[in-house]
Amino acid sequence: MRIYDIIKAKRDGLELSSEEISHFVRGAASGAIPDYQLTALLMAIFLRGMSERETADLTLAIAGSGTCIDLQMPKAVDKHSTGGVGDTTTLVVAPLVAACGVPVAKMTGRGLGHTGGTVDKLESIPGFSTLLSMEQFSHQVKEIGLALISATTELAPADKTLYALRDVTATVDSIPLIASSIMGKKIAAGATHIVLDVKYGAGAFMKSPQQAEELAKAMVDIGRRVGRPTVALLTSMEEPLGNCIGNSLEVEEAISVLSGYGGSPALIEVCRAVALEMLKMYFPELGDPAAKLRIDDALSSGQAFKKFKELVAAQGGTLERGLPEAKITTAIKALQTGYVTRIDPLKLGNVAISLGAGRLRKEDKLDYTAGLRLYARINDYVQAGQTIVIAHSDKPLSSELKEAITSAFELGELNPQPKPNILRIIK
Ligand code: URA
Ligand code: CA
Image (tube, helix red, strand yellow):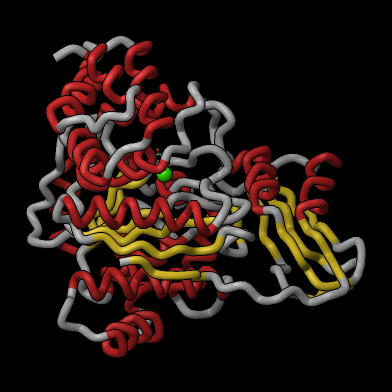
């Protein structure tokens, strides 16, 4: 089999066989196929697309390009978000569903671009380690029903190679390439059932609900074809999901939601919806009302927060002395009176990164305490001079960053039509 013929076939719009796809992915992982041929094929796939069958084959080839984790559980339900700003969902949902009896053995990542990563957030808890051996990982899931670790480098190595090439050759935003990349990693990490939180809007990878729906459908279809039932929620990233952006601030918000005394209503709604789908996948005999009741009960009884504390203790962390706090807080005030009509999540995510909540380069060190806390959301009525954001930082806030925060908010005279946080659920 020659890679030249595979490139030519895809260039001419032909469907690739499973063997051809597997030859390409093996060559990407091993380095046997040079970058120029890999990128030529990626561009041909970008332009010609892939059939559902080809996309499913590509997913399985990516999953099989490295270690596939066997979690030794009859069912392992995983959730994945396509990424957003103030997206604290995993920190809430993982202990919440674990408290409802769904075991969670989850591999998770660091921040990428303007979006945060669960590993960074967890590491803002003093002492918390996400580096467990596979034995510790399975042992902890058996003991407390919940473990969160950073993804190993052996997982889906072909994806690492292909993603790095796509990033620099304008071939990232192709539905079959994104769908197989995400699903391949979930399958390699041992998921038998998958709940996807596919985001659309200004702060998301997919800007329109239509694009997000197309991606969601592609992933649900892959799941069906490869025998890993998958459900996708289409959720809004038109404004930050939670009220907090930044690592320890987001942990604090997750704790408020888990203990029932606060948190952004949008974050709470999305967390409950994701948890509901996970519960129904794990306990198919449970109807909607019973599953919802179990979720309510885990939150109101304190069991969900208790599970979070068990997780922190099991992974070496402590909440006893509280979370680290920033040296400096700066209040940002509304410049005029009116309804908040728009909040630019990208701008706020980038401000948080500049403050030290995320990395501009891989080797950058994080300031876990840095970030933003929002005091106004879309549709809120604010008075001129009212605090809309408090910035947390270790240096005085520059006038550029102040200006960026203020300009992320648009105020108007009319109350905008409320938009749903969850648009649709695709099964
Ligand atoms: N996230 C991924 O993991 N892969 C993609 O291709 C795009 C987003
Ligand atoms: Ca991703």
